[in-house]
Length: 156
Length: 156
DNA sequence: GTAGAACCTCAAGAATGGTTGAGGTCAAGG
DNA sequence: CCTTGACCTCAACCATTCTTGAGGTTCTAC
Image (cartoon, each protein chain N blue to C red):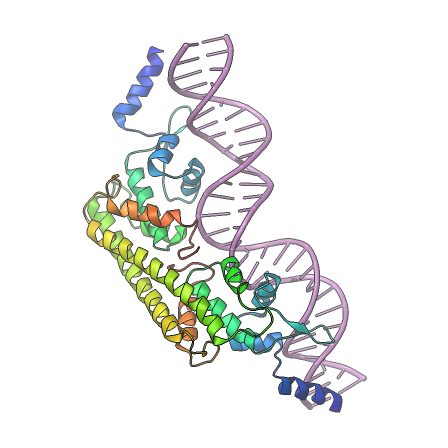
């Protein structure tokens, strides 16, 4: 019992987190964390028991993953971006900022495309041209379609 | 031969289209047309041979599908929207306009969300707050995340 | 020391949006 | 006729992003 409490205290001091703790704090399922790890998006140390132990920075990493997903990036793309973060040290705010800046540009581009689509859609309401080659809407849709398959909207 | 040409002419007069023609004109694969039909998004008549024959309005329908997909809707959602089109007659420009209007609103909402995400992202560059509870960016991501799973961005 | 929660691995399943392939029929031209 | 391309069906497969379940271990608290 004393032993057990000591271990618990040790973890608290080191600020290491278990999967469950990370899941609760980050608002994702444990299975998702397993999955992210398998995909190389996050890493963990192991306790002697085999249980995962996470450093605090994993929370930021997950927050970034969620933001990037919301921006429409695939996990693969996010991983590629992460691959350019420094391996040796915990990424600094500046490191994250570089990522953010790139994604902001991407977001801008997609907002631009969607805005255009909306404007074309508004312009076309009731015009009856939807199936014609010269309809700006059809072309807008095609332009958006070029950049990715399926429901992915902001990818690439 | 005379018979055959007559059939061809008949189709031309009636302006019926084969899958291949529709695929070329609409810019989608034949397999996609089969798939859309299986999902109830488009319908076809059959020639005596069993080959599909499409009316001209299928082109508009497909154009609308592509636009809606670009706007982030799933095929299921598009089908539900289509289900409110009149069964009996070929949809009029006004019918399509009603669909478009609804989607425009949706598009507006998503543009708003993405813009907010971008602004938060811009505001957060270098701020170092990404993993903290009060970070607007994390919350923005969560708000976006609520409305749909996976890479789907504009769904619902 | 024992229950119950939390953890582990690995495999399978689910939803979305199609594509690919096998095996066979139909159409159009020479 | 006969070839070639277009078409048919049906099943299997692909990628993505996870979740669920089976079967078993470890942790924590009482």
